Image (cartoon, rainbow, N blue to C red; front, side, top):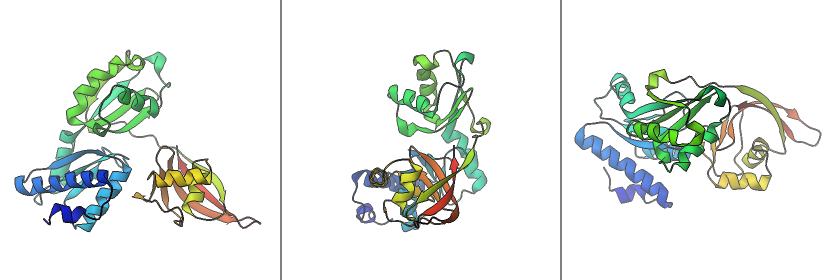
Length: 268
């Protein structure tokens, strides 16, 4: 492998360099030990960063996996060349597990994703050990690193909101299917610039939308986008961290003032 400093010289942000340096270490471990290596959970920005970096260095023996299709948070799994898909899949359950929270009957339907994540943060537990949290009326399935399951199971009941809940560790194969609801919404924008679209989708001002984009919270088709003037196209998938996921479904004509009407699929 090329010198690590040379590979990372184009990355200015220290946190990016740290993340990618760890990825390079995993690749080197796999090459020398011929065993699978994997990271903690990566968020959407880190996933975009890592994917682009691995393409740049032309490394292909990896998988980004979050426990189910379309997971938002994923671990990077680096594997030896001798591994095929079946060998790789057998290792998933050794890497990730699920902590299931089943609420007491009187608590069901009361808690959102924010309540579960807020509880984990309040406990001082490491966010990078926790993946997606799939919330249902009766509770939630929390995808976690295998080495973190017992800690989370032990600590969650210390929170008042979960003191009467049943907390158990289950396998990935028993994960509740994520309930996906889609609704069509219509927005009318002055142009197809990203900041205009984000402003309407996030229900905020254009200046605030520009801040959200600058904060690296906006992704188009899985890739982080920080250019406010980026032109949006039909069928683009736009994810705004903290606001949701949207698909540009249809351009629905132009108003008399020249604004564009867009039908957007909103995942709720």
